[in-house]
Amino acid sequence: MWVFTQTIHIEIYHIFALPSEKCGPPPNISNADTKEMTKNEYNTEERVEYSCFDKYILNPRPPFSSYLTCVKGEWKGKIYCLKPCIVTVEEMDKRGIMLKWKSNEKIISTHNEAIDFACQSGKKFKAQNLPRPTCNDGVINLPECEE
Image (tube, rainbow, N blue to C red; front, side, top):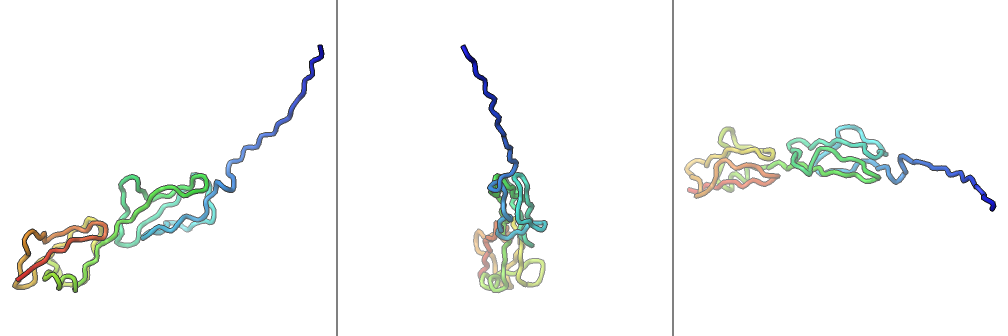
């Protein structure tokens, strides 16, 4: 009985970062920008931090965060900037209201910020109108006053 033995030489290559596992530059996010200069290429697990534009507020509730992470060639994560509310003098005049604590001017309030309004001279709030509405992601329910 003859026994033949054969040695097989196998080379195993472990590739840590295949070209397909790299990410390109981070994507543009509405109303936000990266905090640092970006690169053209990122490895898996590298992350980029964003900050919201002035008067926009980062949504801190999961699944949102301030980071995107490169994961095997794709950017993962969710970033959302809550919008401010803009109230013009024309909108206030149309509703018969004015700012309570300062002269009438266009006002920009951040998400979750309340604005104090008063009725213009000789007017009173319509029933069930709140004189201190709160901005909610770019939407504010303005009160109305009538004679």
